[in-house]
Image (cartoon, rainbow, N blue to C red; front, top):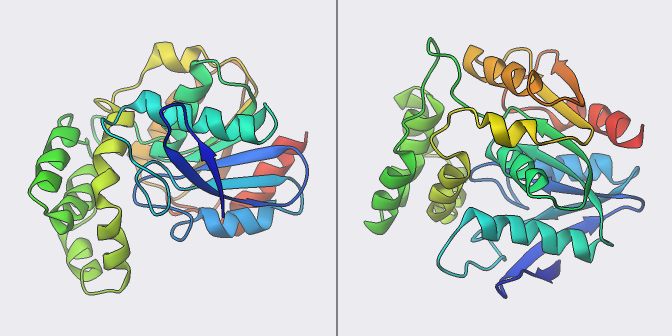
Length: 261
């Protein structure tokens, strides 16, 4: 484990693997260096590039200096870029994709950007994430109801059936999810009201890979296509047989081809 120091003094914990041009991996909600798709993806990318996978603010070994702001998350990424040599590629998934886009729009030294399924609400016929999700999550966390926060995220924000959260609560992974549940309001803050931020997206001029899963819900597929339609210098990829829970083995070759081209 390595550490970088963000602008406000917060410690950002990260792992570094491989050699070559740096690629920083940005997780979505509830994921970290020990949970989610990024650990496996890091292993698969490392023969081709230097992979930096970090714990987002408040997760595991990274600090969480109050008060929280999305700007501080961007400063964390900037600190990692500087640690990596002053320029890097970014890959973000879900809310991490939105954070990555926001970082690029703020002028960070990013060469190429890749994103997977930013979860904007653009399809009125699909599941609509409550616009007040951040406030509701903050209330649950303030009441120390971490299980309730994870359940709200899964059922109300993601749109999973209630039985899914019920089953998950009896599995060992639930304790890991609760451990980082206090950062769910941060993901909601990154997403804002979940509508498409056209001005922010259209400001992205660097080469960008916009990817999604063939078998993902219609709302996510609509969001991916909407984002791709706004970014001027983009490449679109729909990964066959994939959902929002994308397989690192399927995703890695696509990212390598994009970043190495």
